[in-house]
Image 1: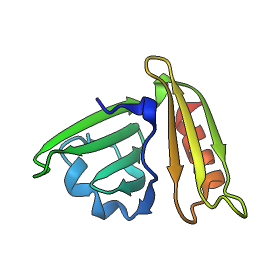
Image 2 (image 1 turned 120 degrees about the vertical axis):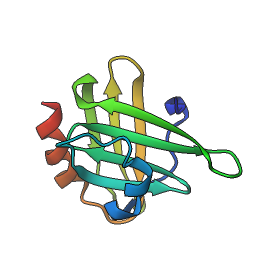
Image 3 (image 1 turned 180 degrees about the vertical axis):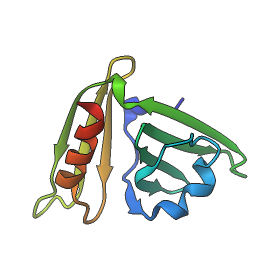
Image 4 (image 1 turned 60 degrees about the vertical axis):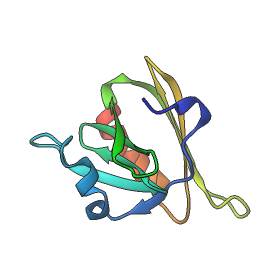
Length: 123
């Protein structure tokens, strides 16, 4: 499993088609992608059922760690919008089993709108 204690690297929003080949084996019937992010070779995908973190390991990238985090295990969540000097927005999720997971999202991303979408699945 990914070591979430040290945080995830800064994420960049990407088109869902660019990560589909990585997560296609994980997607179940009726599950759709809401948002996708990349950080180097790794990616983070929010679906209608869960969050999937993909950690590509090794020099060749053949070893891949998939971590699936269902929304029903989230107890608390928080978003922080970007500011004038701090252009990154942030998302904190608190899971009942693994604790706090912190994500920083680079660039312009509508974190407030995304908060409404996540609320539909968490609440």
